[in-house]
Image (cartoon, rainbow, N blue to C red; front, side, top):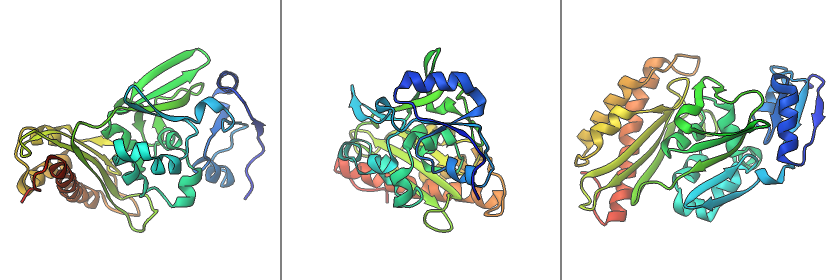
Length: 298
């Protein structure tokens, strides 16, 4: 099918793009990577009368570190983030998660921020930015505001972005010192959206035995990424063990509110939360122990 007719705009500066959003509001749609928007246009599930292409706005295409914080602009491609040596060294959870996002051709066009703005509850990147305690910088013609990742996602395909706002950048602080990481998920086929997934960080105390910090952010088990705070609290200060990880999985399961659909039942997705918690924590702990010179939980 062909998309419904629309008027196309090609702004070259951020103020110009924001002025267009201010003018057209809910009737305008932003085009960045297009991996979510274009299928909707061709299927006529979305029929915006105005399309605002931000790809030539130079200020939005930067990937850099500022005062120790990783800054990813709105038009930076997922593949560029995945392959960047600074990201791989300082934020290894991100490239590990990106390997699960679609296929290489999709990641070559899809943007990191575009996945966040689309807010599919089964997508990997929203859970990653929640686990990393990221912040999202939103801009409009009236000014800017910064929103914590935990507050950005509202429900299915819905964020706090106003119709006149643009997500211009995501800012990600470094993970806890000497922390291990893991991204694990279950999908029917590689490249499919996950039935459930987990972004995990785990840091050990200097003794290499006790858990100093942990973050667990699940995807695919609710309308937004699920940060399993009760499970995290139960882990901190404890000596890592398979039994402890299993208990954390049970607490995460209790917090999950998945839905049933044609791909999996709510009960199965809740079961996966426990499985992924055990797998992710074991993997992250093994990596953290290697950094501390210790050994994984027995």
